[in-house]
Image 1 (cartoon, rainbow, N blue to C red):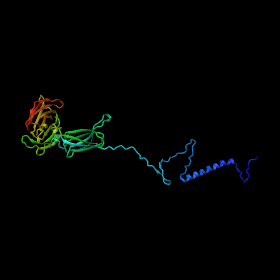
Image 2 (image 1 turned 180 degrees about the vertical axis):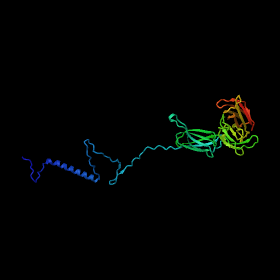
Image 3 (image 1 turned 90 degrees about the vertical axis):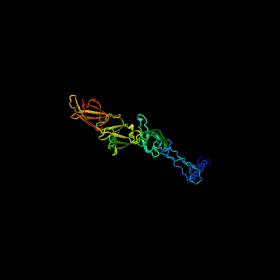
Image 4 (image 1 turned 180 degrees about the horizontal axis):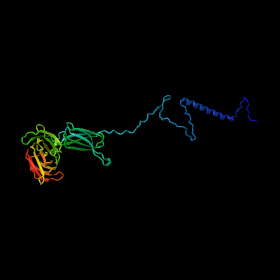
Length: 374
């Protein structure tokens, strides 16, 4: 029996066994259409499929959208995001605050406030070798009328406080060590009162009249040679007396050893400053200077030129040497030598050790010719 034939313009009827697959395919298509309509009503379109590489990875770079947590909202309202957790960056380092040192100064003798004292804050000397750091002054102020002073510095360094009374009294010191940021440290120091000023008067030993223009010098040590007639030569000039023969020396002058007094036409003198302690207005008497013209000859009576002649005077415990050189006539002139004290003369070539002669003592204002033989 021949199979069904397809005639032009007519479709041959299907067998019953072929109708079931066609019916199932129709139902599946309807379901797909319904699902697509539902998705379209939700307002979201499916992203286009990315082309796939042979390895299974999408081609190109992808930038994922940030993940947002959403709250469920009624239909038709925009979604709300959950609050994000607060960020916690690392805290910046704490700012270092300067340290403060409060200093109270009092005089040791009577505990009175030390006003106008010099107060300074120093960084201590620390370390050795490559780590060595020298001491350094960080700040300096003066105390107020109540003896108080405030100083500041950077923290975390070893500190020291120095203080001395107005008028350059002795120095007081206290170590503080390292201070932490913002620390306030109170310090109490006792300082010595500086010596009182010396109201000095210079007078003529014979007449009692004031000596104007007298030079006052302070020597810290016993100098062995004070040069030529410029007594005392190497000591620093402090003051000169006024028309009334008076001069006010600063208190620290009492810390010296010798007060050297010299005036034109007078014999220079040295006064031990320790002898003036407790005396408010010490008085110094000057004698008229003596004059000596020394003639130097040899054993044959021939005058000697270019010979060094010296007179050594012991002024208290202060040794002073006066020197002159003989001229072409063999004479050495000393216009101002101390009077009323022993003078030891020496004579010899400038480069030789001089010979010792007997001591002489001159009267104030005396002029003497002195013969010295080599």
